[in-house]
Amino acid sequence: MNKLTPRIKKGMVISLFLLASHSAFAQNPQIVAHRAGTADAPENTLYAINLAKDNKANAIWLTVQLSKDDQLVLYRPSDLDALTNKKGPISNYSAEQLSQISAAHQFNQKNNLQLPAQETTITTLETILKKYPDTPFYIDLKSPDADPDIQAKAIFSLLNKTNAFNQVRFYSTNNDFIKALPKISAKINTFESRDDTRTLLANSVMNHQCPVAAEQSTTQDTQSVRWYGFELHRKVEVVEKYTLGEARSPATLSWDKEAVDCFRKTGNAYIILFGVNNASDYQLAKEIGADAVMVDSPKAFKQ
Picture 1: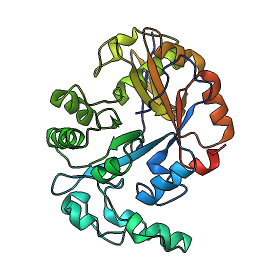
Picture 2: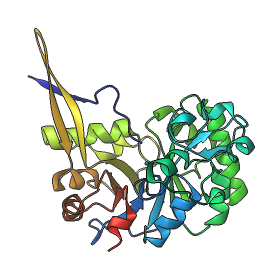
Picture 3: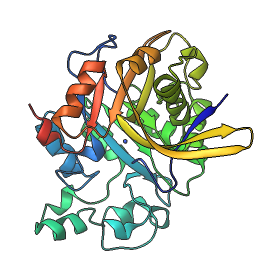
């Protein structure tokens, strides 16, 4: 019997708490602003958050890293020169030093703009949580060199200080970052493992099999709502194993109603689909019952 194993191609990286109903089929998927609206404004900045809220985003997805002094700061790339006029990793700088660096430098040059400096520097997650206490945030942990346990302790300390446990939920493509959080406190909300999410989706879409959903959960008990985040369409490499070898071929892993039903088979599931940036994809997400979609431009989805 041939065995199909989905595998993400090397070099592909994903960059992403809604207080909402967990009904089986959302009438209209809610809008999550990817990096606070990376197509509309300098990503992960106060300016972008304000604009996303003005454009009626229901929740904000932010990317954070750990600074030299173990503060959670808003920034996505592995090196500062990707977006700023500085160089080096975030971990080379303190939060105070980063607060003097413009995260809009490249954006301003590309678009011939001069956005307000006080709204476009690299800021801390603490600042954001204090400024927007009623806004739901999803936090994508992207530190390329952080120790999972040290980062988890920093997260717990911050949430405890700001009383924001119910305001935020954490996601990461690094499973060690997610696994470290419940060890610190069960009060820290997380998404399900990306690997588990991909496996369950692949089994449903490619093999039309749906294992017991409870077996997929590594972070929450069977009575909880499980939170899943994954691309609406994801390019993968399919590996077919034979007795005498294997064959590889490209494929696209796409959600359908069968997959959504599978994720909700044994309990509540909240599903956010990434990379929804046009009307047809939004309509598909709505038809199959996604709870929310992550978009690059909240402005384009304002209606």
